[in-house]
Structure formats: structure tokens, C-alpha cells
Image (cartoon, rainbow, N blue to C red; front, side, top):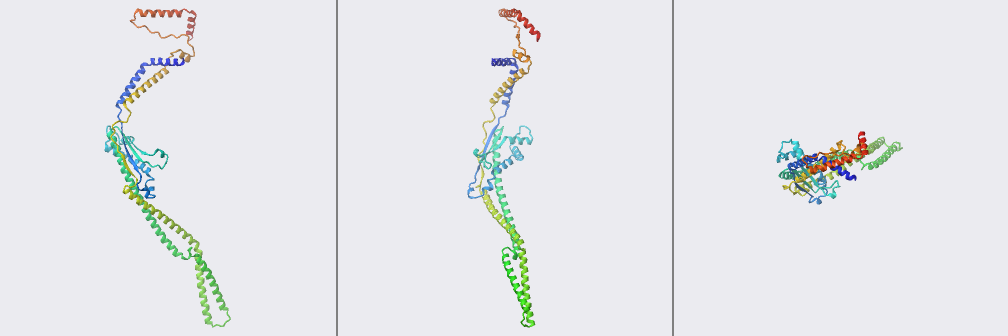
Length: 432
């Protein structure tokens, strides 16, 4: 019952708002049709580039780390270069794009950027990896002219090929130049450190770690010789033998000279032993620096060899490169939505809008149209509802008017018959 009342209420609302709903639907359909007819067609052209893997990468260990590990970054740099303002503006001027209306250069650049899309081809099963390498590029251009769409896609295709080749060669050349410069720098550093190291070993030959143990042994022997010579001198001076004064003086002088030489040598060796810890520290530091430089030199030499091989492969097109898989063809059909679909969608939207407008107007209207409205708004249950009485149209014949008059009189008589009901109705009217 409630559903039937709701449906009847909607039907009455549609009858009341039929005129405005019709106006909304007609205007909406006309506007949708005009928009569909005036909407320009959009054509899409696509070019595909394949990224070929190195053909001889397996024979050059480590060379892949120089050129292929940053492949994805290289693609991003190429895309940024092609989408730069100067590059895009040059393409706009070359093909005389957007010449239908006087637009500023910034808007032309923005329109072409929105019309162009460069997408990487990546295996979906490997897309979650951060180091995945794309297998190709798809360049798509969407413009209102089919020939211009194909020309723009092919233009950017050619620019990608040129820029990719240029960047690969530049990267290989710069890498080789860098490692050659590093190799020369480290070689010069090694040579300078070797000269300094040799001079240091020459100046501290008696305190070097390799001879310090012999110096300690020699110091012990010299101290023993010194003691023995001093004993001989004492014996000579205290000897009771009668020697000539000249002979005794000569022997004493010889023993004194020997003792002086031994003492001097002992002092020299002791100085060398005292300086040995500092000499050993500097010696170890310089030796470690030399070892590090030699290790770096060996690594740089290996990298320089790999860079030279990479440059050679790049010059012979044997390394990773871009190849044209598909050039953009002139599209025959537009890819924008069909005009019939747009018109039908506009008509449906107009009908929905008309229904919504009618419902809103009826909702905002303060008129109480049914007994349920009266009971809900005034909290009064109506006893009698007097319908709207319409005048009979002129020109009706007596045959049709007579039954209506009779029916009206009978209804009045029937309404006037019960006096109690009439009194209650008058009482209710007076309370409103």
C-alpha cells in the first residue's frame, strides 16, 4: 500500500511538473546534440622502440655495470630532455601546430605535452622490482589532425634514437676519460710517494724495522768490546812490568782511541734505537699508503680497460641500443567517443536532470497536496478532502452536461443528508 501511494505521488508530481521537465529535456538534448556535432575528432598515432640487450656482454665481464645498470635513469633523462620547453617549442614551430588560434608559447608547449605520452614497456611480473629493465618505449601522440599525430610521434621517435645514441657514446667516452685521468693521477701519486719513501729509508737506514734487530745485537757486542778495552787500559796502567815510558804512552793512546771509536759507535746505535719507534710508525704509514695507491691503481686500470672495451663496442653498435620496432602510421579513424554515444548520454543526463529538478521544486513547494501531507505537517487528520472542481468546457451538449448536473446534485444531496456529519465538518472548519 505504501509503495502504491509513493508511486501515485510520483505520478502526480510528474503531471504537475510536466512542462518544466519537458523544457529541461528538450534543451538538454539540443545542447548535447550540438556539443556532439561540434566536438573535434581526436586521432592517435603510436610508435614503438625496442631496447636491444648487448650482443657481446657475456664476453666482457663487468662492462654491464658501466652502461646497463643506469638504463632506466637514462630513459628518464631522455624523456626529460625531450619534454623540456625548448625542445617541445621547437617541435611546435617545426610542424606549425596549434595555428588555428593565437596562443602563447607556454600554452602551446602545455598542449603538446598533454597530447604526447612516452611509456616504458616493462614485464608485469617484474614490475615490482626496482632494478627491472624496460624492454621498449611506446610513444603516443593524440591530436586533432591525423597526419600531424603521426608526424609528431615519428619526430619524437627519431629524437629518442638520436638522444639515446648520443648519450650512450657520451657516457662511454666520459667514463673512459675519467678512468684514464684517475689512472694518471694515481700513477703520479705512486711515483711521488715512492720517491719520498726511498728518501726516508735512505735518511733513516739504521732505524728501519728491518735492521733494528741487527743494530741491537751490534750494540751488545760493542758494549762488550768497550768493556774489554777499558780493562786492557787499566791493566796497562797498573802493570808492574817495567816498560819504557814511550811504549806505555803509545799503547795507552791506541787503547784510548779504540775506546773512543767504540763509544762513538755505541752512541750512534743507541740514537738509532731510540728513533726506531717513530721511524717504524712513519715507515708503516707510508707503506700502507703506497699499498692503497697500488690497489687503487690496479682497480682503476681494470675499470679503464672495461671502459675502453665498452667504448669500442658502442662505436661498433654491439652494445645496448634502441631499434625502431614500429613507426607511427596515419590513423584512419578517430579514437574519441562517438557522436551518437555523446548525444545519447546527454539525453539520458537531461532526463535525469529534469526528474531531479521536478523533485527539488516539489520538495521546496509549501503546498499540502494530500491527506498524508496535512497529517504530517499539521498533525491533524483530515475528515473530508474537497477536490478541485473544474468548470465544464463551453460547447458541451446537453446530453453530456445533464448527467454531470445530476451527479453533482446527487452528491450535494448526499452530502447534505446527514446533518450530524455536516455539523462535525463545520466544527472542524472553524477550528482550523
